[in-house]
Length: 101
Length: 410
Image 1 (cartoon, rainbow over the protein chains, first blue to last red):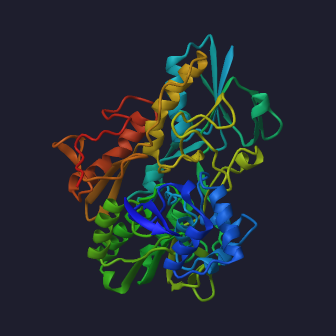
Image 2 (image 1 turned 90 degrees about the vertical axis):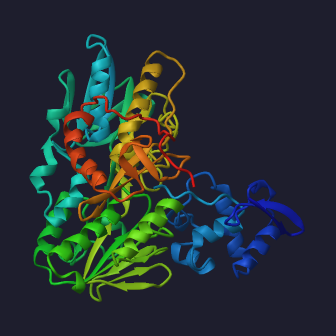
């Protein structure tokens, strides 16, 4: 665990940069985490982030977000290029989804 | 007379039928098991068929051989579960009532979920090895193949036996070396995971082994579609990988009956308490093995360990007591690495695979995250253990809860 400053707040993050306490998350914090990933957040991004935060405990997968009705899988990749699930959950301030092995 | 109904006579259902029949008085408890197939497949053996190590006959036996006397067996499709009314409807209208239900209907591959996968090249130049048909067709293809690009791709998570595609590429490396065309075969491992495996220490060990064997790894590849004309796989973010032969782990889903019963998630896996293994929806329904959504491997070893917990908790539930047993997510997987060697991983919900010895600390005989001949023998011997001990619910000399003894933390 390390400390990091987002939006003027000193927050605990994991070694991979995920917020330890999701309840501390604000939209301002999201914007700053996104900036580090070179993403400028739009209204669409925030709709996806909202869905992710509301479904954080349900075993999120790319497929599931693709069926959310907010964005399809291709659109999800367009919003968060590269690793959309890893990146979006980090920006949404929730725990990194565990891949079930 | 009270009734226990078990859906699915695979590894989990068969073990539960054996354990429960032994424990419960026949005058008080009626036990019935339902399955649509009469043949029991030793699924870990499918992996060896493409390389001519096992034949079809090595992996099949009649299911009835493993169901104990005093358990009714019905071969039928299941229409749906009506949990609110404690009953199950079979195909053709027959109704089975139950006091307790165990769902053990497993997972299956569904190639139709991926556009282009099950088209003209299916079982001609595109193969799965999670069905007996796919494994046998691939064997025939390999027997006369001249070499080219072999691409092993995983379509979606989770999938059954997460080490199987790794074992597949290791065995392919050995096979093509032995037939003298390894220099003409380019092997590529394509995965939606960020590396060879999910957890860091095992990923490093297995990643190093892949490199050593000259197998390319393409991580973070989320399969969108297969192009049969151009012979390419495509990802959602526009990457394309050409193949001459594609071996695939198709999307895994729970049984369609789960969807018809309204009991599944988006992939038809059943929301299940990961500790008690009871359905989140119904108090008298337990879920064992691949059919559940618990966050551990979909594998026979997990089912075997989970069976102890389901059994203990059924005994509590029958007596109207609190469920006492807690599953820890224990999984134990032999990994064939080719040329007569193997590795072994042992882990649970909380502890990632670590190096060490198993089951005896410091002694073994098996080496965790090590590449040894003894681990390979473990895998070979396991088929005998599976048929003769495991399915019949006999005690094996290993603990169902994962132990830290013999494991080394770095």
